[in-house]
Length: 247
Image 1 (cartoon, rainbow, N blue to C red):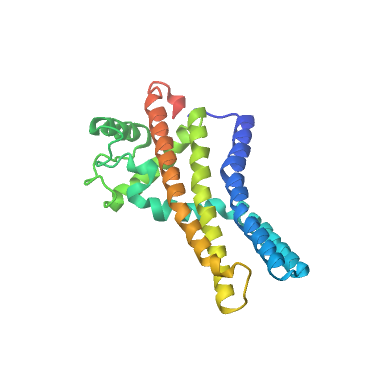
Image 2 (cartoon, rainbow, N blue to C red):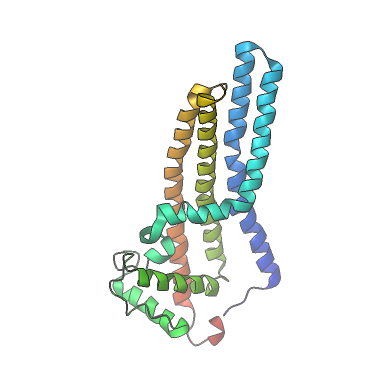
C-alpha cells in the first residue's frame, strides 16, 4: 500500500477539518445570528424596548455559540445519519452505487474488472452475488467492506482527497441546515404555545424554507459524492498490479 508521510497526513487532516467540518458549521450560524438580529430590530422598532431587544440578541448569541460547539464535534456523526443514511440510503450511496448492475457510470465489463481486482487483492468476491443491487443485503454488506478498503488504498491520491473534502463540505452543510431548521421549528413551537417572540408568526415559514433548502444542497452533496467515488475507483484501477506495496 502506498503510504502517506506523517506531515502530509496531518496537513490533510487539518485541511479536511477546516473545509469539510468547520466551514459548514460557520455558515449554518448565519441562520440564528441573522434571525436574532432581525428579532432584536423588530422588537426595538415595535415597542422601543431596548433592554428586551438586547436580551434577544444575547440569547441568540448564546444559542449560536452552543450550536457551533455542537456542530464542530457532532456534524460528521449527524451527516453520517442524515443525509448519507437517509437521503442517500443503500440505493444512492455514491461509493457503493457504482458497483450496482443498474448504474451507468461504468459498463458491466468495467464493473466486472473492478470486482475482479478487488477479489485478487482483498479476497472479497463480489462477482458471485446475484442480483447485484441494493436489494441484496449480502451484496451491499460486502461492497461496504470493499469500499472501506478502497478508501484506504487510494488515500495517497491528491485529487481524490480534494474531491473528498468537497463531498464532506456539502454533506455536512446539509446536516447543519437540518439542525438550523429544527432550531427554528423549536422557536416556532415556543412562540405558539409558551411565549410570544418577535417575528413569531414567520418562524414556521422560515423553518420550512430552510428545510426545503436542504434538498438542493443534498443534491449537490450527492453529485460531489459521485465524483469522489468515481475518482476513487479510477485511482484503484490505475494502480499497478505488479507493485505489491501498492496494496
